[in-house]
Length: 212
Image (cartoon, rainbow, N blue to C red; front, side):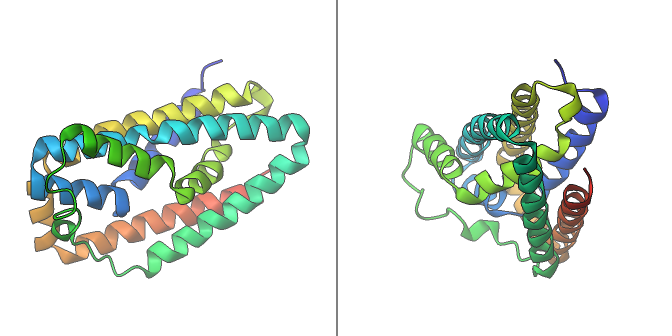
C-alpha cells in the first residue's frame, strides 16, 4: 500500500525544512565542498544521505515489531519520541545560529579520494545514535495504523527522507562555495533557520505526545 497524498506531502515538507536547517551533516558537506571542491562535497553529501537507509531499515523493523507486540508500546514510543523532538526543538531555539562551514572538514579530509569521502559520510551517518533516535521519533507520527502495513509505510517514509537528502546534499555540495559565502555574509541566516527548525521540532513533538 502506498502512502496517502496527505502523508506524502506532509512528510516531504517537514523533511525538506529539517534538512535545510543548519546541522552537523550539512555544515560538513559545506565545509568539504568549500575546502576540496564540488565533486568532493557532493560525494560526502551523498554518503551522508544514503546513510539514512540503515536507519530506515531499523525503524521499519522496530516499529513494526512494536505494533505487532503491543500497541501500548508503540504509543509509549510515540510519546518518548515526541518528548525527544521537543528537546531538539528547544535546543535549536537556544542555538546561536553559528555557521562556520569553512572550518569544517577543511584539513582532515584534504587528501581523501571521492570514494573515501563518500564512505566517511555513509559511515558517520549510519552509526550516529542521534540519527537513530531521530528516525524513531520522526517517522511514527506519519504512520497511519488504520491503513496497516506499518513496516512498508515506515520504509516509504525513510526512502522519501533519503531521496530528498540526496537531492539537497548534492545541490549543497555543488553550490557549496556560493552557499558558504552567502552564510558568512549573513550571520543571522543560520539563526533564523534554527528558529524555523526548532519550531517544527516542537510542533511535531507536541503532535506526537497529544495525538492518539
